[in-house]
Image (cartoon, rainbow, N blue to C red; front, side, top):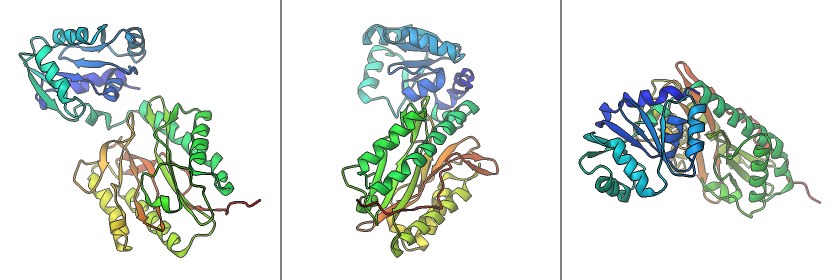
Length: 368
């Protein structure tokens, strides 16, 4: 991955963010900037250098990972929290405007830094300084995202026949996660969603003890994690032959998802993708049953910029990787969601999830 040049890009953004130095405390941003994967660390981006501040558990690991990433950064270790604050005070000395990541710095931390580390500086709240660079993936990031998607596709292919054996939602979710690990994933991207029957009308239902039965709609929303990078895919199945209503829901959501994917292109407003999906669903009479946004970026975080929603956000850019996942949810009947992750290109998009969408009907559970 092109980790070594990232700090320079962020440094070029500091003036526009109104600060002279940036304190990066959001751990995915820390990892993206330096290659460091520990659970505690703060990066200080200054005009002429980059310094990672961590505690005694991670000093050697941080040096090794930063060197492996080819990043020119110093590592400073503070054995206690006050010692780390003292290091930050030293690194920020002489700067009039110190930027903090407003979305992740607590009020208590801000007050502590103002009093103990930067008493004479102006603390500037910043938003998205690192994230807007993170949103465009380099080749190394894309390779990891594609590997995570490949593993998820393969795991679903291996486990899908189990739905014909009446497992519980939780059993199927566990088997899917185990399959991803056996295929090389570091773990699931998030808690796997398996929602069956009436539970499929709940967009973020937690896989539970309900046994999957003939006639159920089954929403399976999951992903694999590979070297910090996530995949995200949803497929909806019917166990047995679909009812007329189920068949209609599947067809409507499939058409909406196709319309959304067809809209994705560099330079298109993220909101336009949401609108394209929503118009298809509304025309079918289910507009009030599409209760969430159409998609989001994926990378080091499962939900990250850019977001595809009803409110204006940003224009899509080449190198973004986003999901397109419209859904319709009808209480008492069930729900359907279809999701793919796609790479945004100058002339459209390229899917990185490939599990088939044209075979949603599964055999009825076998009886003994």
